[in-house]
Length: 150
Picture 1 (cartoon, rainbow, N blue to C red):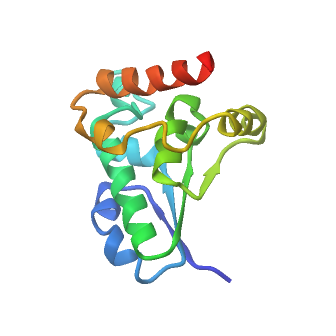
Picture 2 (picture 1 turned 45 degrees about the horizontal axis):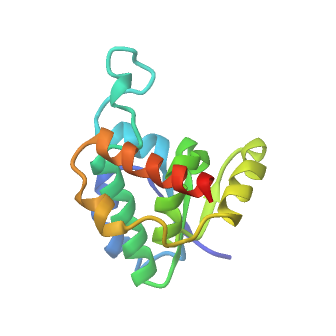
Picture 3 (picture 1 turned 90 degrees about the vertical axis):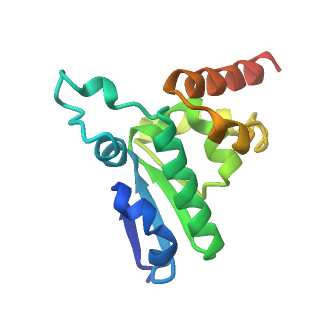
């Protein structure tokens, strides 16, 4: 039996390299991670606009957790709404994420996109250098447009 942990808070992201020594896998809970990163309740209309997977801090957090997991030779999955976001696929494939957990209705479309997408489409260093939500979203959207043109 494998033993793993959910990574859903900025504190867990910061400690991922330590936690990785004690578990068999990580599952990054993106809904809570995004909410806790910006200390903004995603169900509160006054601050819900902060709930955005393209925020550079979220991109860096996911990168750090996946890097720590793979350095420790454990697998890492992405769960939550972001796992089924087709625009995030180039990022996840470039990171070599081991698993995407999503609703069953999302699987066929995501699976089809993965089949037609090179794993090196996203330049990790390029996305990590972006400093705004809009720049991250535009970068990933442009990558998806390139895939559709092929």
